[in-house]
Image (cartoon, rainbow, N blue to C red; front, top):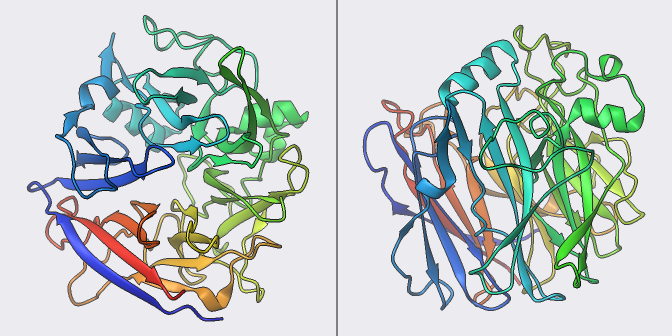
Length: 430
């Protein structure tokens, strides 16, 4: 039945100046009330120019001082740059009593601006992504392990770009980690599509010939804690690939949800963008939507991905933007947050409106009569390139409200990057 929400929107920090946007996001650090808050500032895509963190022991009522993390997370070496994982945003595993974070590490093989220029302009594999699991029982001492699905070397801090590391186990970290009732973890990664095809015994030139060196398939990792070794034993799933005739950017930013029935669901962003540099094969007019796959055997095998739907059969048309699942601690109901548009979405836009909808626990489809619009572009005040897609979500354990942290990038008509950080408090009818 329809849900009646109360939504409060407020600015929590103004943009720090011209050409700069500020982002804030929060997460829980344990099974109680300890929170972490991140603050980042940037004036360019896919890179952070300032990064700081602070902590609260009382569910965000009071906070400690900001601590700089940029120096630790953004480093240079011999003409290369490194965006290193900082393990303070993840999930508490109550079965094993420790905190687990899944983080992305990106090695730029040149300076980051040059690497991005070559990636976007010539489809070069000019940076290398890997995913890492970080584990801590006290949030002070951390152990990390590379997410692996094929042979390859470990990361060496004295040589970030060595050949046995770059080009092996390349994986863009998925949006979340699910802790199953037995304490196992399941999480998705966007693994290099050529590696996925090799593991499946497929010829990547028949599946994704356009630019396989920079695009992804899907692997879901099930990880079981080994108390003696004090690390997770990883079991990667059979890979899932999608042809470049359906998604010109393959699999991007997958997010996973464990349904009450035991079914595992992954939703990911594809793309219908056409690019001469990437030699894309997708046809003009191909609709843009989220893609959906599921597993009924604990994550070993996955169904062929299909366009995600509402429970009434309506397609979830959507640009190529990130999305998140979140299950309410108060009601137990699972919700999806993301951008939904009409069938005319192209590439990464438009990145509005931002919506949420409940997930059907049998199928994993969205329940159409629960669709809620959280925010949208106001033509009178917001510029056309508005992005309501840079967000994080939290379920407040005291109030039961959902919190959305979002930077309204592109709202300023005169300065795209000058953008404020917002908080949305969403109280759903019980």
